[in-house]
Image 1 (tube, rainbow, N blue to C red):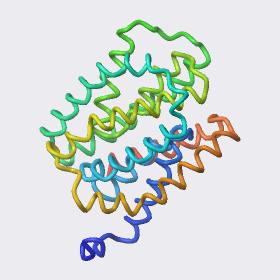
Image 2 (cartoon, one colour):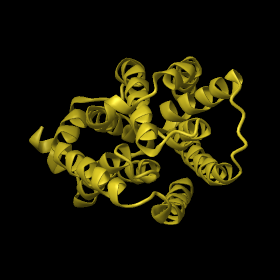
Image 3 (cartoon, one colour):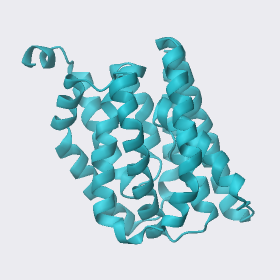
Length: 251
């Protein structure tokens, strides 16, 4: 194992710890950073391999977020989203087993860009307040989010559209999302282990080393969320994520 770690470059270690830090922050309220890390990790470790490294990091950060915000979740929204999400996850598993590594990378970057578009639309929706709440709305977003989550771990903005439509207060928004993403990622876990085989002993070892960065990021996210609104970060996050996604697309 030591020999394997010696093959990890300094750039890869920096990317790993930066990603773990930002995932921790995103799970505790700093919206948008979770999307930005997808192309970063894919650039450092490869598109398909990065999903196996990221999955345990996401789950560990989800657990922390649930621990802190668990009392603030509204379960009716989670229950409405789950059926479509499961369908989307299964569709993502099938797609991921049929395409090559390069196709996987292109699809992943395309999903990130799509998620960015949704994030911008979310801002417009926030201003107009005109979003349908029909059950088909939750099912369709669940399918799209589950697929995006399985293929590229890029479902945050998709699910945020639904939660925003429910006009949840900030902390309830975060608490509901924390529980939902923990459940969502636990559903995905067996597929990563036994179907895609992306979660390996090496990936898990890297994730264990990154735990301190996850915890620091989660702590920072809570503090930042208390002090500032998300609007201060939005333009920066959208711009940097778009640049990262385009870099991954043309790499």
